[in-house]
Image 1 (tube, rainbow, N blue to C red):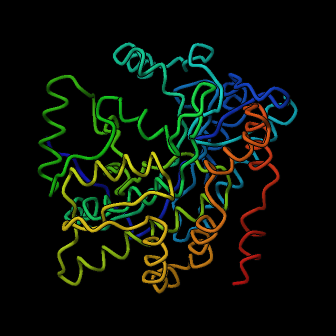
Image 2: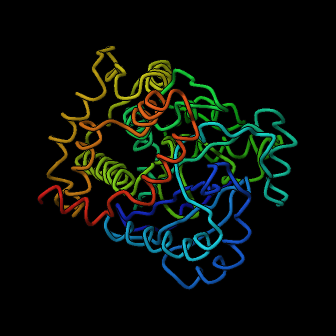
Length: 387
């Protein structure tokens, strides 16, 4: 099977943000996607952003246009959210985002009436019905298909860091799970989801797809649901390991880190240097540790088995990659990683709110709604950083 990799400008960026729709009073998820999409989906085709549906009718996804900078992409996302609110505000539907809804139950949710979603549920049964998960996807343009799998291999070292920074699913169906990112472990139960196979070049990927399509596992490349994958149609690498980010500044920070990492390793390839990789068993262990402990995790950072606190390792990474962030004009957004390290993740905040409320998870949902609605705009946040 020949799979063409589209032409894409190097280190350009695109972001997708999955957003929950909830009753403003009770915090229960509501099947409001059709109202939003009926009003906005067609019109968004003429904007830089798009607004589309997802697996469940309680979810919409907003997607940026292709941008050279994080700021450009975040403007698209902010414009999309503003458009959505013109529909949801009069209906008393609130928006929020996290890797999971703290107390929702799968049997109360409706699946979007599309053949691909019905086929997914029919095949995956209980696990498919339990996919009450929300995430972000960050696309970065790659100008040469020969770079794709070396880049994916090197970026896999930092999937636990990204997972820890974005951790926002400590509760599941009304229970505290003990995991910072329960979503990470739920999502990998789907066929073709989870960590990527350790492929080294595009021809191996084409062989993999040929095997999977020929045996009926999937229809095409869009059904590869790895934590990091090629997106051949767009000519990008797509990072999908992250929980849904609860605020726009946090989304911008993680997008900046992904963009900077891709550009860093692309330059290493240009210089003829071999990119680092980890044994697959270390990569798998790191994913579990990040899901369990979030920013308190210790992760394995090299093939010798050296272990480091993920937060300390991120601080070192920020220092070493700061010049690239400046060149890519995302230094202020990149600095937001430091803010997450200092202030904690959404997962940490949700647990603190729950404890303060005596375990009332409806208060956690109201907290997430307030964060999404009343938190600082990205511009206000960047101005507060003093850059």
